Image (cartoon, rainbow, N blue to C red; front, side):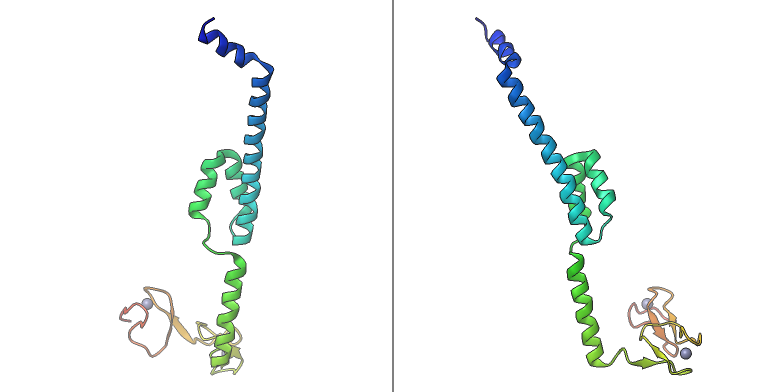
Amino acid sequence: MDLFAVFSDFLGSPIFRLLANLFFLFLMMLWVSLVYWTYRDAKKRGAFAFYWAVVVLFFNVFGWIIYLIVRPPEFLDEVKDRELDIKTKEALLGTTSTVCPACFKPIEGDFLICPYCMKKLKKPCPSCGRPLKMGWTVCPYCRTSL
Ligand SMILES: [Zn+2]
Ligand SMILES: [Zn+2]
């Protein structure tokens, strides 16, 4: 009785086949749950959920690792909460209660032109694109001379 014969006997045995099937089933379940988990996680973070689910479906664990690296760092709900928080603070400070100097309709501080009467309110910085007041000679955000 040699070792190889024992081994091949084992490979052909119903127990091994059962174990192999179970292992295969386990891998499939792991795969499916990875796809599902990625889809749910991407949706919560506002990423392309369907796209990432497909990536994980095709590349399995490798796609999943890539997703973990490039996924948005925070949940959409948290971002919304923070934006709401900022808006509340701005409202308290009164920064949102600006009006257009030409038509007196409500505008926001970073508008480049008035959406009602098209009056130019600010100019975009040629370097960083932030809204600058008309009279400024230097961008206070990136120090570009205008
Ligand atoms: Zn206006
Ligand atoms: Zn700038």
